[in-house]
Image 1 (cartoon, rainbow over the protein chains, first blue to last red):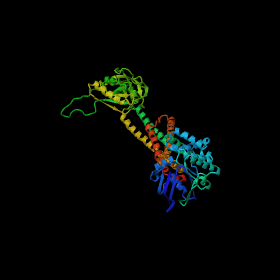
Image 2 (cartoon, rainbow over the protein chains, first blue to last red):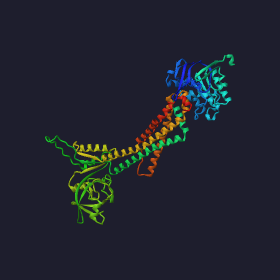
Image 3 (cartoon, rainbow over the protein chains, first blue to last red):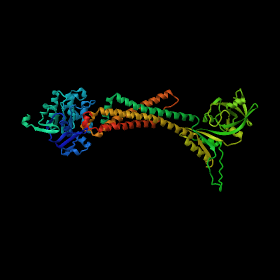
Image 4 (cartoon, rainbow over the protein chains, first blue to last red):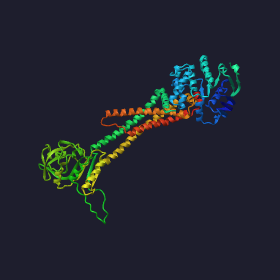
Length: 230
Length: 402
């Protein structure tokens, strides 16, 4: 459960102040699947970073599962990022020297989980994203779609509540892009909250709830009715 | 992060950097090796000088009758304390300690020596066969005093090279009979001039058995007893034994003085340890330079891996974990370099030992330990700045690549 109230984010660029987010209110329930669309510079990535606790708002209130995150210190924020939030990026951000399995294992290592419980989890999630036979391949030996599936596996191995995807198909051809979206939708079906920031209307339109942003503000927030979604 | 995970991640990152990490490793290794080789050199020089001194009799204790101290209660009360003479029996008693390897009683006097009308006043030493080894003298010809019963007053003499030249001119002295005071002695050996002696001119000396000298000078007392301890470590034990034994034999009075050559050696030791430390210190500067190189390579790593740092933070790494990861890499570099340096240093010392067999290159353990500690510490110190820089990165900017 996410609740944003009057979120502002102001960047200082030289002596000019740039208002990236302007009084944004947004409530996201558990298990929702929503897309955020809008032109470049509309603030959608900034919003995603704030939702993912990578960035802090200049003002406003962000409640995650009833707790005010704006009062937390860096360490608490890092712990919540590790436990409750999964990130998927346009450029995958896999670590090149590590194998697919090692990349996926990384969040568990950071959470100081014991190797004995880590390995089965990695195996299970590799199976889920359909990459068992690619476990020991390095990212440069994988296709773009496979890399993004590794990234999704990494983002979800800690069983987070929310998956935040920033242009997840932006660097993929349409076929592997569709596979990646399908994978995320499957995860959404099993209860994961999925939020996708995208330029691509084909991707954005699939989500039941669509948010449109312009100049740092939400200008449209539409939810398809169940019969329409089908 | 668990330690094995931390080490694995850090070493994986280092291996990927290959050549550059290898060069830093080498720089650190050279620093450590330099400390080891240079301190080994200093220590080798110290040992060399110490050994040279040993050949002069470093284990030597000199027992002198009488006590160099002020006793009594002033002018009002005269407490009589007459030092007893040292006797041959006292000397024999010293031979019973296992801390004492050998001893040579010494009687010194002056007598006129004559041969075929030529006459000369010379210092005469009365001693035993052990004197040759205790003082490290060498024979030019013939042999030294015979070993055996020290109470036997044999009429044999060993003379210095100058006496031979003066009295016997061009003929050989061996086997000839010369007159010493009112007694006749047969020359059985000539001392080599090379023999070292501190305070005695070996060239102009006549040595006879101690009992003969006592008869010659009509005195039962010894001038001193030279004692050679079994080793340097045994010297205090030997000294204690001598004092106790002689005191027991002299009705409980400690009326002798025991001096050693150890004091001189100690001074040399101090000088050489200081020299070794100076050399080690100079070499340690190269470890600091290596530390700066570690900082450089780590700063490059941090800026090259900005995205990785951003990602780690996005997937839940705390700042402290990021810092620890990069610090571990720096530490592995310096520690690995240190280990390589140990191999290089000991290898170098071994090689030098083969090239210069007279010197032993044995790096002192404290210098080796200090080199390793300095290497690791410089890795820690200079790795801190890059690691902190990584830890403090803003994740959003880092993910964009800075």
